[in-house]
Length: 251
Image (cartoon, rainbow, N blue to C red; front, side, top):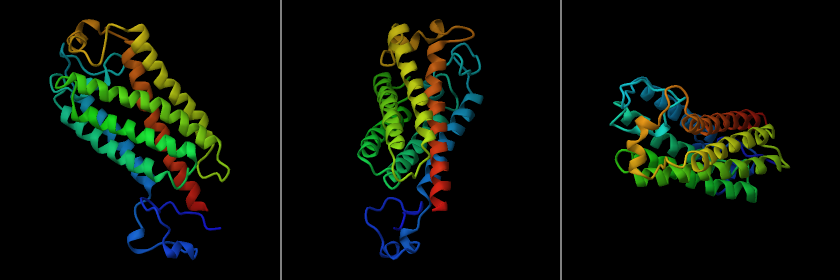
């Protein structure tokens, strides 16, 4: 039985060359969808780093993930390089959605299909976070961020289940264990935000204006916990892409 090569992306039908057991050529041969996912993760990560280096906060302080929210990187009022973050987030989100769509080849199960739909919705939320900076349209920004965080938590959990239940293993099952940890990071941030930090709301302009007074000098749990799921999901998706790329090229 012929197994799909990792170069088969964004096509719903099987080229005749594949049916004969040969590699597709011509327009059916594209960049591996896993490589697109790795590029998306890298763009988001690098854009965050570049923007943080040029950051000057309300108190003219440097950026620290220990006590600054992610959204502050995209706020022109605090971040001179906000455009780098916002464009990087939008570009990276698009590439990540392409990657997720490509996983229909490696995770064709119902759970995988459900996770893909939810993940693309979460990716749209992430894209819109870049479109609507918090100091430009706090309501649209906050709602977009919540779509990303709530969607991300559920998506990673369902993808982890789909990976664990594979019969024809195309993605390493160890990723299901790591995925549960990433989903827990999403949950920890949401719980901290809604239960332990009720005064701060991502959809309230008053909360934005309270940033300077709310922010502790050294460590702010909500800011740190917001970074954990972003770092976790970027690392998890990158590892999943590398695992899929290596594993399926061997088949």
